[in-house]
Length: 79
Image (tube, rainbow, N blue to C red):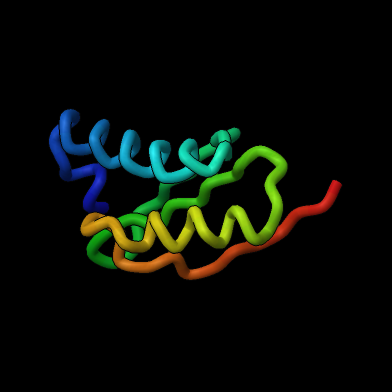
């Protein structure tokens, strides 16, 4: 995937950007899972408990990053 082919500095920058977008909405990352997908990577992020309106705002911000093609889905998990 693209992240696999990126330099360590670029990969770290990508993760910092994503984390920054979430953190500015008081959302913390619990887990990140990456798997190769076509010419890039598919990333699944599990976050802390968050209101749906807040996560949607954060994901809109994430989708604006030049390194992100799209946010394909949002799955709410209730415990």
